[in-house]
Amino acid sequence: MNSNNHPSAYGYQPDGHGDNRSNERPWQAPPEDTLKTGSVEVERKTFILTLKENPRGRFLRIVESKGAHRAAIIIPSTGLKEFRDLLADMIAEDEKAAKAVKPTPPEPPVV
Image (tube, rainbow, N blue to C red; front, top):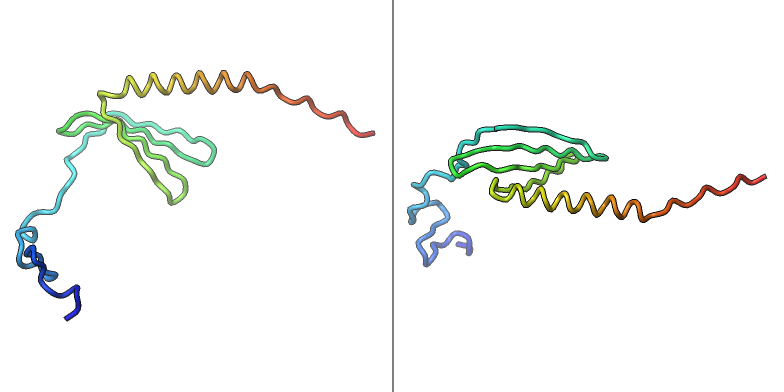
């Protein structure tokens, strides 16, 4: 018997007997209703924004997709205004930084 096959001191056994977890139903996400969805492509990434609602409340899910890679964040509806304000601040700062960068003049052609 190797170390993976012996019963645990806490009642867990590798075959699923010895604890009550085997009788429990697996966790399932609560049902969600989609209220609105939209997407935008930026460079080679796609961002999908979905406003959803479930029994616990409303939330915004933002999914970043690039090829086979996907990442998501969830913002509860109670934080959407703060998120919007912070995003507006970031956009304003980006525009300010873009104006501060002076384009280099093109080099004269070589004759």
